[in-house]
Every structure is written in structure tokens, then in C-alpha cells.
Length: 260
Ligand code: F6R
Image (tube, rainbow, N blue to C red; front, top):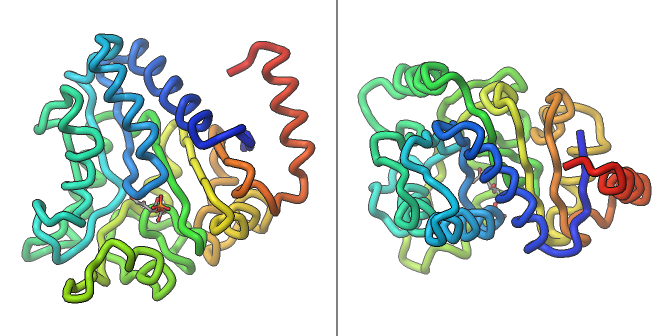
């Protein structure tokens, strides 16, 4: 587990986008696992800029989103399909047929979720998974007490997550309480994981994820089991880490030795 305390959110987004673009050069049919929410927007802006400036070709890229609300039509302003179009898909040349979201309807949702897992496997697995973290430690919509062995499935959102996301809904709007999400085991199967976290609101969750015990009560702590995960944090999110100065020293040594 690498923990990088960045000077700014921009620097974190620069590092994540640079790594994705380098991976894309090596593997034009890269398989990306994508997150929504405010955290990854800077990365998507940078990928869109790279496309605009002719520095990147996404025509063979395959994408799998982490999660989607159940009960919102695809074109609803708060659906994650709308989010991804607004922040990435409308700005790069990813083919619609290469874009995948967890299923949200159909007679047999469990079977459709199992099929989502098969589609990921058929693409050879996820090369790079982008993650944010909830203030309760969730990744995707794997809420506290989610099984560490979970796969794509239906989840009920916690009160905390509903409260955190209430800002996106007006007084008359009905906020969805259910979502389908990749499971924790699905996320851990990605070859590389980049988790960004910004803001003081996430500091407790970050500390529990990085320095707490591996526990389903903080789903992000399962990332300790992954061999190649990097936390890209701003100072506010890193504020409660007890080994903060050590992580800084590790980073200084990495830079001195010319490592990524
Ligand atoms: C979204 C997702 C969530 C968010 C998390 C943080 O696809 O999987 O786990 O990453 O809720 O959200 P923001 O970035 O809005 O703070």
C-alpha cells in the first residue's frame, strides 16, 4: 500500500491521470474501472484534455463503472450514466459498446449482476480501478459490513451515504436508496488501484482504511490486501494518519530514486 500526500487535489489528479495515460500508451485496449462523485472529476478533465490535444486515443478502451442507482432512468440528471457522459464519455472517443454499467433493472437482477462479473472477466479483468472513498469508508457502494468476498450485487445505501449525497437532490426529488455495485472482491481483482481522497470529511475513513484493522466495518480497509494500491490524498484527508511523516519520507525517497 502506497500513501502519497499530495500538495493539492490538482497534483493528485495529475498523478492519477498521468499513470492512466502511460498505461494507455502501453495497452491501447486498456480496461478501466471508473468511479463517479466529486473526487475523480479532475482525472476525467485531464483525460478529456489529453484527447483534445491529440495525446490519447480511447477508441479501444473498455470501461466498467463501479456502481449505479436503482430506480433512476439512464438520462436522469443524477444517474451515474449521466455523470459519466458529462464528465468523460462526451469528451473522449470511447465507443458506447465498450462502456459498461452494473445492471439496474430486469427480471433477474442477481443473474444480471453475475453477468456483469463475466463481462469484466471476458475483457481480461480491470487494469486500473479508480476509486473514491465515502466518509463511512465505503468503496463503490460497498457500505460498512459488506462482505470482503462480495461481488456485484444490490445494496441498500446507509443513512450516512444518503445524507452525504442529499445535496444533489432538490426538495421534491426522490433520492434512490438502492444501488448495484461491484463487490469488494471484484474491486480487489483489479490489477492496479488508485484511490483519491480529498477533504477533512474523509480523514477518519482514510485513517481506518490505511492504518486500521482489515474489517468489513471499513470496506476500504480491504485494500490493505491488494498488492498494488496507491492512496492519493490531500493534506486534509491525510490529517489523521499516525504515520504521516513516514509516508512523506517514503515518497521523498521514491522521487529521489526516480520511482513512479
Ligand atoms: C461512486 C462511488 C463512491 C464514491 C464515494 C465518494 O461511484 O463509488 O464510493 O467514490 O462516495 O464520493 P465523492 O467523491 O463524491 O466524495
